[in-house]
Length: 115
Length: 112
Image (cartoon, rainbow over all chains, first blue to last red; front, side):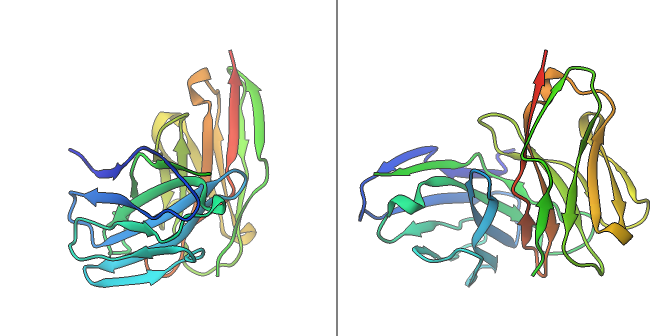
């Protein structure tokens, strides 16, 4: 029962480099999202998707790009890494329905450092 | 847009002490509320959730939370904490769609 799988777990980038954080879920969830976690600020929504082919911006989208070509995968791309993007990134998925079963499941996180 | 306030950023308790962590959200109507826990080095796990009905919600590991609509609050409680409860706790409210808005988190350290 894999749930939400994120890779890599740790990454160090140089300023200006680009990379993709991978996220995959095997629960057939329509809704997927990316958050960044910074000390004292909780989790802030970067981008989200309500289904394959549909994405939208969250609270802090600048410097990030996403796509959703399949239900299972929701990669997050850093276009040109900056030190301000040093953070822990979490991917989450949930059913789209708003009923009592709509719990979000989180991946293990990716700790990214930009030097 | 909703916002979530968690009143204490750091809490230190001795084992067997009672715990109450405050959480307030910014506006009413129908709300879906959650408490998540993040143990050191791990991902977020759901402790409990409120959608409707009984305002006193029981979750895993002996945690409970009370939804008070008039106060826009959803405080987390545990009668007797253990060393293993050391973690960061996040309150969250579901906004339109499936978006979650999180509070800043409360770091709980339980001394053995």
